[in-house]
Image (cartoon, rainbow over all chains, first blue to last red; front, side, top):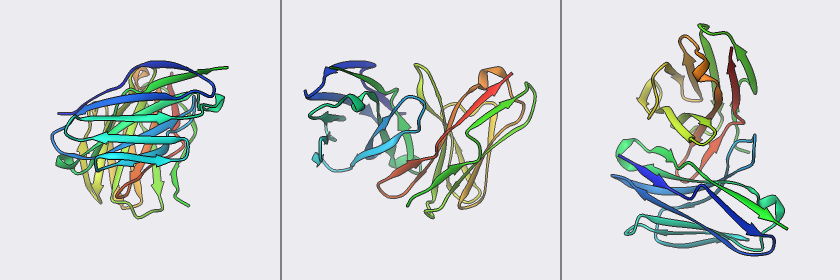
Length: 111
Length: 110
């Protein structure tokens, strides 16, 4: 089966850096996604990692370690608009590319 | 511009009604998904499809069925709506390295 864990809530300060962790267990790993979701809206794509290492996209970076079943999303120079839920999702190769989501981390940014 | 379109943004249905939620994508993606999202429970997979007429159950298929007659369209069917199916329903479509969502349908069953 699959299992994805991420913290339920986090709080950070405007201008700071925050790291949101995600651990997963899957029978056939085929990529990991990070999504941002504002309240009442659909998730929007942030990043995709299939190989180990760090992928940087502006203020957001995503890291993957397949051997540890671990990923993190790093947000730099936090802005108030970054207050949202961040969803980690794993694609399972063994189930016709099924994508399973974690429960999400609600990030609150304080001034 | 990638588009995943869900037929309705808001729906109110009565208990026992048959409900159809439609999702259309224009990226020629093979994989399409239906999720529901509830507070504190995150996104839960109901059904997914990896090709026309092919479907697989997700984690919570009970009370739902799906139809994929054409590649671009994936329909979620509530055979007999119940109040515990009140939720936000999200359709997604995936390519090789991206997964795009529709805008969501907030369904209320009264």
